[in-house]
Amino acid sequence: MPLLRIDLAADTSTETAAAIGDVVYAAMTSVANVPEHDKFQIINRHAKDELVYPAAGYLGVTYTPNIVFIQVTWSAGRSIAVKKAFYKCIAEGIHAKTGLRKEDVWINLVDVKREDWSFGNGEMQYVPDE
Image (tube, rainbow, N blue to C red; front, side):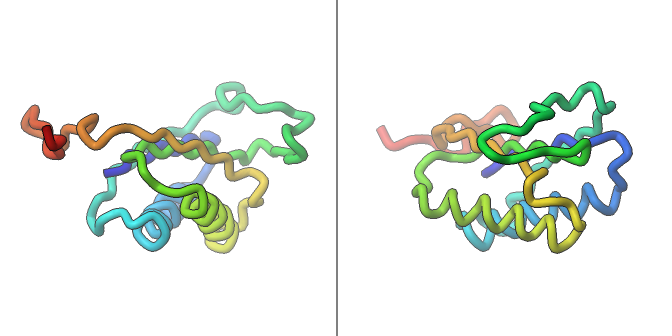
C-alpha cells in the first residue's frame, strides 16, 4: 500500500523517470514485502531552483543538480534492517539502471497506520480490529 513520490529535475528523461519508478517498485516487492500490483506513483519534474539541497553537502554526502528526491508513504511496521536494505537496493538499482550517482538518491519513508488508506470508493479497505 505504498504511495511513491519522485521529484526530479525538469530535464530528466522519461526513460530515467520510469526506470527510477521501476527500481523503487522492485525494491518494495523484493525487500519490503509489498504485494504485487500495489504500484501507486507520482512523478514530478521541477525547475532547478525548485529542488533545494545543501550545495556543500550534508552528513558527508554531496549532491549535484541530478538529485532525486524519493518519498515513500507506507504502512508502519518494517524493521530497521528492512529499511536499510530498502535504501541500499534503491540507490544501487537506480545507479545500475540510469547511471545516476548513489549520492544523489535521497530517500524519506513516512510510516502510517493501515487504516490511513482508502484505495477508492471512499472506503477504508484495511479496517483495524476493534
